[in-house]
Image (cartoon, rainbow over all chains, first blue to last red; front, top):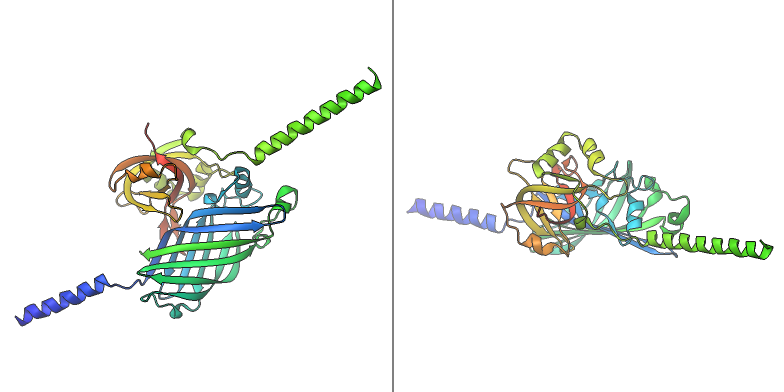
Length: 188
Length: 158
């Protein structure tokens, strides 16, 4: 009888742990959304991409993003062609942009409890073949087991060798663009 | 020909030329996006073969399938449905991946084709047509294998 009670207690505990397992360890997002916005007096340009892959480690705070550049979609096909072309992002030779970094204040995020947490992320951003260190702010939201990360920051295109010296692009594309990122994570 | 006539002819040519150039520019500026589903298939192969090609040499595969302008090759990929999900734009995403393969082929449908993706079920073998955006490969920072990305997809019936 005693044995049976033990068994019951152990299985109940195990069940409780599996049923209410808090999100922890390595989280993966396979369909994040990234967009950018460029504003000039001449025109506003927006592009959207829904194929961002990202990982977030809840213990270490390590984060990584991989952005397939050809998945950016523009309203006008000519803009999309320019964006991908050899003179600008050269996406045939550099199909992905990458970010790898760390959330400085990861201990402030309680992944077991619903809430919204402001975080600071530092790391290296690689676009084309240029890598630069960046530090940006973001928000991590935990809601009933789903972890979401959002960030919005400005990017100077010239820092990554994306420059427009002449013609329409030099007047129609802002030197500094606004990047918005939104990703839902799940356990691996 | 009188001087007046010459001026008239020259002026006409200039005006017609400007109008033609302007309409070409306007056409290019507003050129519609390529219609993937009505274009012909460039490559038909299995998801397994495509993933293997990328894992063997991503550079060679990129040179073969990706295009400078972003108008990359149109693929018809056959494989087993591993999962069906939705992205943040409400588009259905069908992952084709064979048992034992390290990466698969992630096919994003569109508002126009979502309905045909919803008829699919996990485990089914299917051929999906779409444009390739990027390849498969191991990423050390993510510490995982990324899938081949196909977009503007629809179920392909030969």
